[in-house]
Length: 183
Image 1 (cartoon, rainbow, N blue to C red):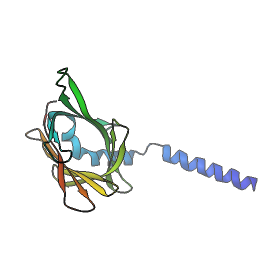
Image 2 (cartoon, rainbow, N blue to C red; image 1 turned 90 degrees about the horizontal axis):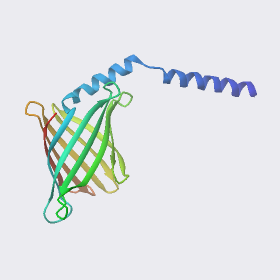
Image 3 (cartoon, rainbow, N blue to C red; image 1 turned 90 degrees about the vertical axis):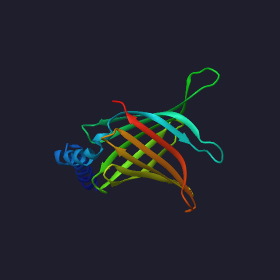
Image 4 (cartoon, one colour; image 1 turned 30 degrees about the vertical axis):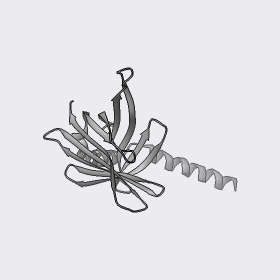
């Protein structure tokens, strides 16, 4: 019995070492799949509006900083929304999020993991709809969220609409962002 355990441990160690070794083909696949996002990389600035229930949408300035990381196999996306504080005339952060976009060669799907500055995070789905049109989203209980992105690399513009649906009902716009590439 002792020999069986030792053999199992040795096989597990060998399998782990194989998985840990660099796989040049996997790196090439990931890099190639992520090239579709080359136009995303840079700094984007503009405006956003957030609709929280009935009433007037809340405007904010918006920035997206997008970096290619890990030898071109993932994107790191950071978004910040700010408004002027009437009392101090300083910028106040009203939205701060970060996401990692990658390609999973096993499921053959793009994956988006997002994080908010309040500690919340989500594993989102991500789709390429066609050239320079994308959509991502997630479910939060009975609420479904989706964000649609249209990028114009020639004009250097980014337009994004966020919508939610409760219990499979109609989609309601709750977020809009329009950015221009600055770097």
